[in-house]
Each structure stands twice: as C-alpha cells, then as structure tokens.
Length: 224
Image (cartoon, rainbow, N blue to C red; front, side):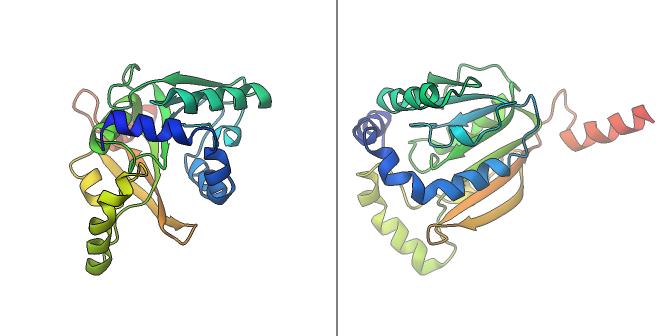
C-alpha cells in the first residue's frame, strides 16, 4: 500500500463507511476508549479518526483531537461533531507519520483499525509515542497476525488481495512493538469473531535519561 492508494480507497468509503463499520465495531471501540483510563482535563489524540465513529464515546470533560489523511472522511466527521454538539472535539487533516504536534502533548493516544491500513505502521507508532507524554496510555485496536503457523501462512497469502480494500492481514504485533518503549499492560481479543485485539500500552520513554518508572519512584521519595 502507499499513501495515495490509501487516500483513494478511504475517500471512496467515506459516504457509506458508517453503515458498513458502525454498529458492528461499536462495542470494541467503546472498550478501547475505556482502556485509555481517561481523567478530567486529559488531552487525547485519535489517529485515523475517519468519519468520527468513536467521537461520541469520549468524555466531554476531556479535549480530543482527531487526525486523518483523508479529507472526505473528515468531512463526515465534522458533520457528526456539529450534529452532536461535540464542542470538546477538533479535527485536523494530517499525515500520521509526520504529526504537527510538539513532543509529550497528549495524555493518551488511540488508533482504532488504523495500523493495518497505513503504509508505514512503525513510523506511525513512533509518532504516537513522541506526542504522548511519558507514562501516558497508548491503545491500539487492530488485527494482528495469528501466532499459528498455518493461519499466518494464509494471512500472508491473502495480504496482497486485502490491500485492494485498504487493509493488510499480516501485521505482527511483535514486529510493530519491537525496540519501542511501550509496555503492554493488556492484550484482549474482541469481536467480531475475536479477530481483533485491543492492546493497551504504557509509554515508558525516558526524559533526560531517566525512565518513567524511575522518575515516579524518585518523585515518591522526594514527597516523603
């Protein structure tokens, strides 16, 4: 897949995306947002927000920014924001591999049904880590390749066909997270068909050479 093809495919989907993927994936989207463990005043980034199906699920006492590469998808999302009065939500058209946000801006970052649709998933994840504060939550809702050798072989075989509909079936969670600073706290299979995973991670990136757990321990010692 390349960026031009992804944009073309999802622009074509934009008019009926909610009809195809709304109700069937609603519960898994809600579960993913629950795992962000949001608090009042938190700043959230949703990567690949699309038509904004998940936007009504965020607490109104938080600030939410949704980004997407595809203009027609964002147009549908903007209509949803206006119709539902989601004054705490903002949308921007942006390439997730080069986000126009400063480091450590967000308390939580979520990508739902995104990592298998982008040409460079590791680059997207690196940007998610960069803009998420140390100790913040990063949640991925996605299909990841099966550990079963036979199933994995089938997924690799059909992956070229899947790219025609804007999706790859052979993305490995292990390869995606390899050499990142993310600690996986939960990895849950969700419907439909338990084909999808919600992976809740904590961003353990260091600042000034001190890791997140060590900073927390030192802070506790100082306060005592």
